[in-house]
Length: 255
Image (cartoon, rainbow, N blue to C red):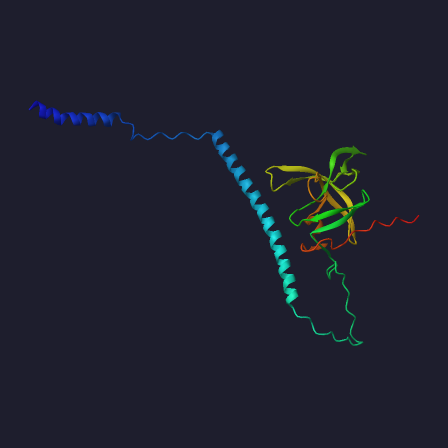
């Protein structure tokens, strides 16, 4: 009788002991979120968002460039398929003579520019190849040894225009217009650049143009023309190059 009772009571005691000592069902208390940990998480999230937006902007710019180039090619292919027009009927004396528009301008007088053009800078009396970039807001100029100083109580800047293909560094001194912050698609931080206004000639056009100064010696073109210069004065045809031709040096004023 004692053996039977023992065999029945012993499992019950073991079960009770296990249920009292086992921590498997106990839930750990949540740790409080500290302000430092929250700031770190927010900073990490902001960095990821900034990186994602930069990559997306770069991809959008690349897609836009490829789309416009393909569109221009489609237009040229369609033009080749259009049959030749019938012979023109000679105009009667009463009809006005047609207006002859130049090939490098639109009917409303805007310049037609290609993917690349050649520009003349009066500050150094020389011409340089320039890339037309509708994806860039401001124009930029290749500059080294940039120094800001004061002249007659006003800020000035000196720099050397230096680039591959330029035989020597061309020194320039000109008033400082302002500073701008530029964010590159491949970088998270912004770059503070000085801005100058130089007289530039493109085709028949000659006017003061604002340039940000930066070292472009590792890039193909020493001059980049952005949207602020192109708006209201030019139409871009990226399927063409050097539409305006090489500018001629300005004629010296007669004495």
